[in-house]
Length: 295
Length: 218
Image (cartoon, rainbow over all chains, first blue to last red; front, side, top):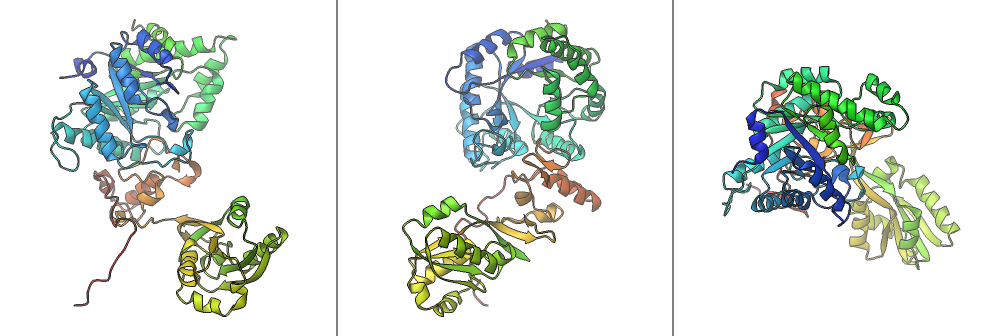
């Protein structure tokens, strides 16, 4: 059965996804609230998997919560914490419980998170996880054994269009598509002219591209990302625009910038949709979408 | 030349390991730990002073030529009573030397260091890990640079998203293995090797603990 998210991708409409972060603990009310306000507005809700290597409620549990509340979950799976047995088992479980979309990530180093002495597994990488999914769809596990019931997933991966150097990333991007990625979510993009040049290249491949939009909440936050987040470049003009916002109006300015970028991406048909990352401010995603003219 | 790279244990850990052991004989090693300045003659002398200040009796010290050599026990036998008088041997070699001594001398041994990796010596006092001895070498397809070792995540299909300006996401001073591999393959006009999908690795090239027997002579 084709997932609703896959149908949206295939329909040619401008696809919008957002992110939902599971709690650090067992109180799920906040995540549930975000799911409630977003589920009918977006085509999919991406559930992060120990984002930045910080231990949290599992993405599988979060994806189930999205489903139970009537949303369309996109399960994030990183290769950092599980070996090939555990990854495949989780895919079987996800499928058996109605989860049909998965985003395959290698995962950040455990050294960046809150359990710095943990063993980083990385038994598979993101392209091998994609290949594993396609193998399991043919009714076999990756050791070649028959499965008693296969899976079927709309599977995607990540690319960083602002990476430096870019060519090694593009080679990996092509490998991910060959391994079976149907959609690609990008790391945050802010310079849409640069992004258009990336899309001139990416358009050659049979894959849907969702531009990553990270909400700017302040000028210092933008500077912090430039300094600390790999492959994210916020142009000075946007930092200046954030800095010039009236006191207490930075978030409003960030919403306006994100909305403006999404509007341009849609109007100029730069790519197939957007993935909005509001990082803790999920309640403003509808405002961003309204600003973009999507609601 | 390859070397075993060691790092002194924190003094608090050493104190804990030596608790209740009052008489200590210290053994340094003239090979790798001399080169890394963790277990040569000056470090052994410094350790003797540290332990004396902490109220231990140092019954003697020596720096054996190669602690991991099977002849080390014979060399140590020349120390005679000074070893017998000690409650424990504090060994300032790599774990290989500590185990060689422990297996042949039937004395309590305490390692003074942590053994980090097998490393290559660079001219500027730096030691780099270039091989993890995984048993399934793929450097024929990566321009002679090992991503299993040089990539923090051991990725075999290209860089992760954390790479930044050619450096690793965990340390801006560490080169991204896949940027190095890319540059090398490009220089050699062999970028196609990087486009090839690498299957999941066999992590049991030789199941741990490794053991290898010489093939029978023909």
